[in-house]
Length: 62
Image (cartoon, rainbow, N blue to C red; front, side):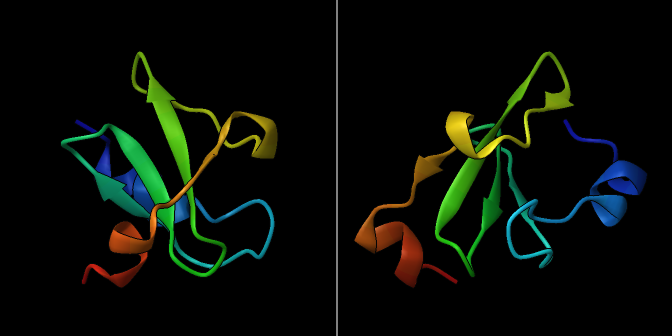
């Protein structure tokens, strides 16, 4: 589980927009850039090289 205070402070490192936490996948999602950043051992890895591209279905969710 992500600390909600930390989540409020985090932004996408590329476009600076807000990120959403996906608890099922343990990732931070940037809808604007269609990227998912992993959270490892409770620490967000906000590196573009570590992010994965969202699938088309994931882009359309919510």
